[in-house]
Length: 151
Image 1 (spheres, rainbow, N blue to C red):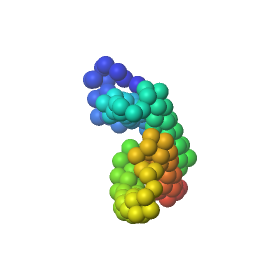
Image 2 (image 1 turned 90 degrees about the horizontal axis):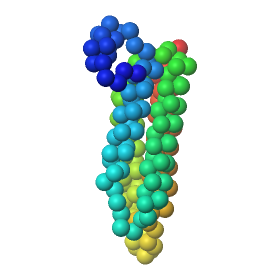
Image 3 (image 1 turned 90 degrees about the vertical axis):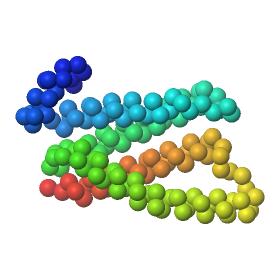
C-alpha cells in the first residue's frame, strides 16, 4: 500500500500494474475512516460511551468482514473488476433493501403505535436491527457477486 508517494500510485494506476488486493486495502481504509468519522458525532444523552463504542466496533467488524467476504468470492471466480462490481452491485442491493425495509418499518411502527407497544427507539432494538440489516446486506450482495462471478 502506498501512503505518500502519489507519483508511484499514479504510475501503477496508469499502467494497470496493480492487483485487486492493492485496491482492497484502500477500500478498507476508506470505509473504516468513513465509519469512524460518521460515528464520532453520535453522542446520545441516554447511552453510555461503552454502548457507543460497542456499536462502532460492531459496525466496523460487520463492514470489514463483509468486504473480505465479497473479495473472497471475487477471488474464487474470475478475479476481475472487484471495485466496479462492489460499487454497482452494492448500490442496487442497498436501494432494493430500502424499498422493502422502509415500508415494512413504517407498517410495523404504525402497528406498534396502534397496539401501544413502545419498542422502537431503544438502543438495543436499534443496535440489533441495524446490525442485522448490515449482515443481510452483505449476504444479498454476496449472492449477487456469486452470480456475476461465474467462470
